[in-house]
Image 1 (cartoon, rainbow, N blue to C red):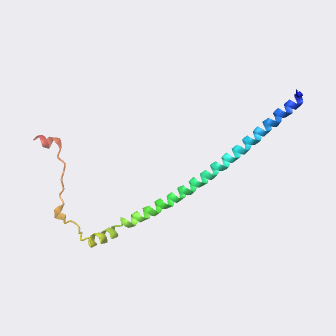
Image 2 (image 1 turned 90 degrees about the horizontal axis):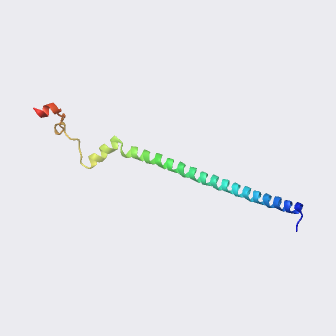
Image 3 (image 1 turned 60 degrees about the vertical axis):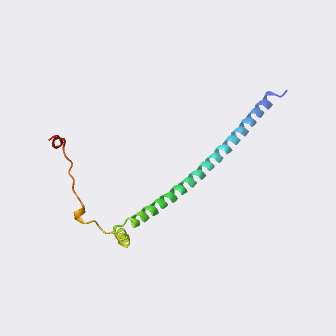
Length: 97
């Protein structure tokens, strides 16, 4: 049988080892989370750049001058004013008469 001092020393040593392992595990978890955060930030920045590029491309594609040139190449032309009609909605009282 061990003396109480030896048992206490063993318990303290085991507790210190458990604390050391927990400390290393928490540090590794923090490093893993930091790396994942960095990866996610890089992905977000890449997506933001891609979004800006796509918005610029959309602006170029929808530019009135470009659309007009493409329309001319396709043989399209604006509709004459006579082809437009203005329709005013009727009110309910006019419908009953």
